[in-house]
Length: 99
Image 1 (tube, helix red, strand yellow):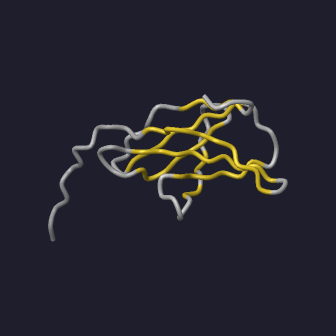
Image 2 (cartoon, rainbow, N blue to C red; image 1 turned 45 degrees about the vertical axis):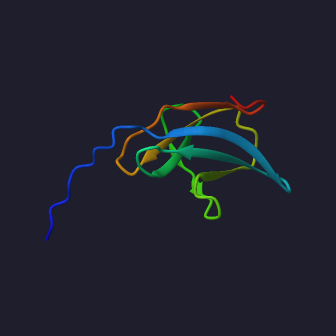
């Protein structure tokens, strides 16, 4: 058995964009995230900045993460977590515009 070595990755991943996508009557939000020193393991969203919820990975585009949004939510926050458990800075999104 080989003892694992601790990750040297200290760089947090970044949510690079958040956009809306309409499919019929359902609205989806698509977040893109990158990590220069590792892999993005998860992207989460929050309506209050305290409670975080996972998004689903788009298997056809590995840097895209999706959440269904059946009704307007107003302001949301997104963050990415990498495979070394570094948590990226929150990205603010307002329904009427991309920030």
